[in-house]
Length: 283
Image 1: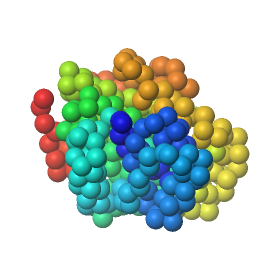
Image 2: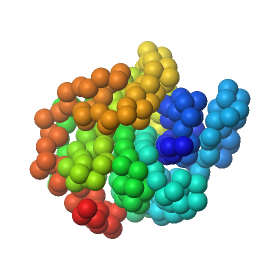
Image 3: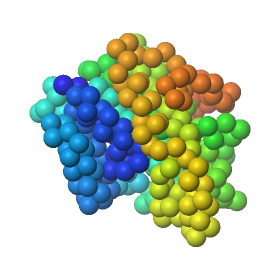
Image 4: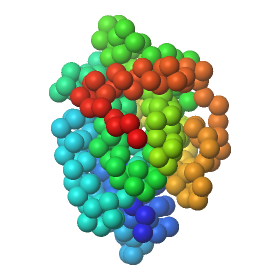
């Protein structure tokens, strides 16, 4: 049975993706911050399929210490239950903020959760992914287009704009996926970014100010249900031969920003290693 890890799996797109994959016979390891929401999500999946293989782990991915602890727990589980193999890692967890906020490490929160958390978790799970010739999938957004990495102030600590920070973090998802493919394609790893489109979820209502909360309450009404983008994650996991594209929307390859270059991908990769105090191995 192939094992898949999904972050942000207790609600929204992550939950619907977990449900689809569990129903199709995968062993799903979901990650969430709230024990109440994780238990509720597990009960929902099992109520529809009592035979589903679903396990939840708790972690706040904004904290790098918790990401490392989570990875240790996942690796122990994989060694015990899955021959040390991880078929797919779906870095879906994300956040939106309405003003400048930092993590314990001093990093802007959208950059930390939307990019660095997945970067660090992927590093910690890399041996299991390599062993399974696995896939790494990020949740992106078409908002990555029309933006550049602010290399001189990547945390946007000066003249902070929350929308710019969000867009930049989504560009980081593409650059990270490209960097993974450049480095580990020969080892059997394939990396992708999924654009879910406008989805009816609560991402804009979590820990945001009154204005952003209000705007998202209105905007999400026009979004599609999370069951729709969940099909693209399942598609990328279920293809027997890894799909050849990088950026997908509704199960089809899409064009992405011209900013997604090897130069930018390498530069972000090196910066992210420094920010996480790690160094990816050369395989």
